Every structure is written in structure tokens, then in C-alpha cells.
Length: 458
Image (cartoon, rainbow, N blue to C red; front, side):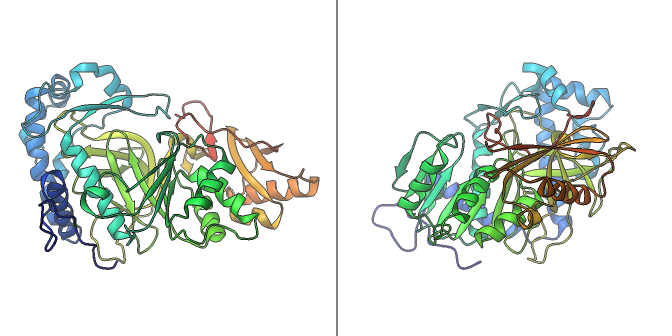
């Protein structure tokens, strides 16, 4: 990571040293705090989390009827939630419980300076959409963590940036990158388009704009990479950084994209309810959790903390949301716990973010694991543009394949054998379905390459 670019000055006539003012000054100060805290001993980070938990619990015990009832149900007083260890005495909160609480879940008021209070709705990819209230303070932490991500990866703000995501407006070009980057730094121009834009139109727009930075969903990036790989000039040479957001980036897809594009993938794990949960480290593929804004836990099926290398449910506590008591909330995702990162940052890590429970293969004993399809070797057999694996029963898997040319029986058998081996020697039936049309994404622009449809899997 090189030196940070100079900040913008908010005072007329002052260019050096820059003096940021207003919200930009607050974000700049918060970024500086994050740069200091990310290398503290873990015990100091957890002590800070504990001090914040105590303040937050006291507030919600006064102003949230649902939180008071939740504490009373397990005999906890708000003042006992003064450490991460004591926080774990509170049973996790499910999406169904949050929904059932209704308006009683939210705090009747927030402290002065936390306004405005807004509302977001999840994409409902679990089939259980929820509404969440968030404050202006949450926006500040999102902004600071976004800046942290850019600084970690050494992205040149003077470069051009292209954003493709479902929430973008119709095609637009802008003079800068927008909030929060442009509030603090001078930036290059930006280009934005919705994910519904046709692929050829996306490619033409990117070729014309020549961005240095590309942000999009993993499935959209895969479609772009396939088209770029099929043309002599390949991907635009201007692109230096590729950032993925909004959906799980599988191990298979990451390996495939890195090989096709010749660039690392810089991933971001976030949710509507909790904001930015973890950022991929520039030193490798580990994800650092945003421990200054969230307590992030990974729990096994018995509710115990997972050790390094183990897979479990992601549970988050928002340390600064005084509008909604998001304590030990089961976000619906699974992750693999990582170890200490070589970068020297002490923020806890994930090795992989695995997606929802339904994205894990179920074995006969009821256990689940992250499936791999062997996608990185598909090209050795046939030109596969897209695939999807659906587990309908313990011994029944549907294998959907998209290719321009019809596959021969030998190719189908070889691809099925590759999948069988990648799934740990799956002994059941693998049914192959061929198509020349791309498989559909969800309304939120997400695509799942593995889905388990067994009863009881959500």
C-alpha cells in the first residue's frame, strides 16, 4: 500500500495542508482511527468492543421493548453485556424473530447527533425479507470502511471508475466517483449502469470509457470475462483493479476469473442490515472483519464458536446502531474462519464466505460442506460459459450447463465425472441439462452456482 492521496480542503483559499470540513472531516478522522485500530492487539480491540456494547445495551434496554423482553427471557441485565464473552450469553437472533417483533424491535429514539434515521429492506434472498432501521452514524462507518478498502488496495482515485450493479440508475457518466470518495479526494470520472444493461452494451460502454477500476457482481463479471476471452484483444488493458460486491464469490469462480483476467479479484462482503462486514486483504484472499463497527462470530450447529478452518453460521452485532438492537443477528450466511493474516493487521479473518445454508451440499449424515464443481478444469473438456448445480436429494444432483456448442456424450460424461470428483466422490445420480441460454439471476442481480433444495434447508 503506497502513501495515501492528499485530502481535499474544505476551506476557501487553503490547499496545503488541506483542512477537511463538515462530514468529510468526520469521515477523515474516522478513517485515521481505523488505520490505528486495525493493528492493535486483539485483546485491545475486544476491550473497545466491550465498552461500546455496554453503552449500546443500556440505550436499547431503555428504548426498545423487544430488546428488553429478549434480555428478560434469559435473565440478563443490560449492564452485563460489557464484553464479547458476556455478549455470547445472549441467544442469537433469527430473521423470523426480527420479523415477528415488528415495530417493537426498534428504539423509540436515538441519541442526539445520530440522525437521520432511515430504513432499508433486505433483498430477501433467503425468502425472509426484513426491514432494518439505520442511523447517520452507520452511514459514517460505511463511508470510512469504503475508504479503508480503497486505501488498502492502493486504488488510484485519479483513475476512471465503472460501476455495474442492479441499484444503479440508467446509464450515466459523472465528473467524479461520488460519495464518499469524492467528498475527501480529487477523483477521475465515473461511469455507472444497471446490471440489467445488455452484455454487449456493457462491453461497448467499457471499451469507450476505458476505466482503471471496475466494480460489479461476480456473475456479471463472469459474463464479461467470457466475452473478453473470446475476442483477440481480450479485456480492456486500462483495467487495473476489479472489485466484486453484492453476492458470494465462490472459490471456483475466483480462480477462473483470476486466470482469465490476469488480475486479482478484490472482494467485499456486506449486507443491507449490517453494512460492510469484511473486506478482502490486499496481501491475499483472507477477509478481515470490520471489528470496529461489528462483532462478527462464526458458530457451529451447537452454537459454539468455530475454530480456524471450521465452517459455521455468521452472526453479527452492530456496535453503533442506536436505532435497532442488532445483537447476535444470524445474517443467514456461512463462512470459514481464517487465521492470522500475513499483512500484520489483527482484525479477525474469514478464509471464505460461503453464502447461504442452501449453498452447502448436504451429506447423508446431515452434515454440510462447501461444494466445488471443479470449474477451473472445465475448459480442458468443453467451452462452458455458465453452470449451476442443484441438489434435489441426498443422491440426486441436477447439473445445468450453458455452452455455445452442443456437448458430445463424451464431454457430458467427462464434466459429470469432474463434478463427482470435486464433490468428494458423490455416489448418487448426476443429471446433466444442457442449454445455450444464460441461466437467470435473481431480481437482486445475484446468481447461485450451487443450490441445495432438500427439506429443512433455507
